[in-house]
Length: 139
Image (cartoon, rainbow, N blue to C red):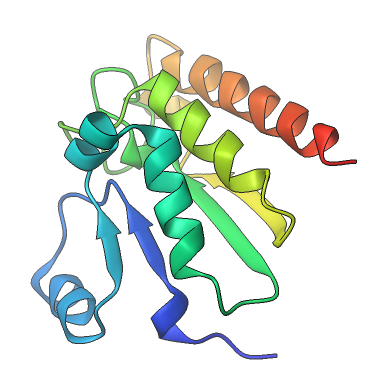
């Protein structure tokens, strides 16, 4: 098994370095913005991401908490404004993991030492619980 860059998908990526942006452009990586999530709906964006993956047997989802807006997710090493909000993150992840090709889901970029209000722990737990519930319904 090998990974093919044509099946890489990004959602709510911000604060991108020039080299990263170059790779996104050069390889035509699907890059759905937080604004698209807000305008189209998180479930629609998730379905578009899954459509991009039509040619794969298995998929791996990594949810970086720094894709969320810094006003609600400060406990990460790279907080940035204009990200997705909690409800959008939950719906996005729930919709993705309902797809039977998702064989692994992870949540990362959690650093509670940077979050004096404890929002990162609370928000990540809510997302984690909703994802586990969605996966359980697959079986």
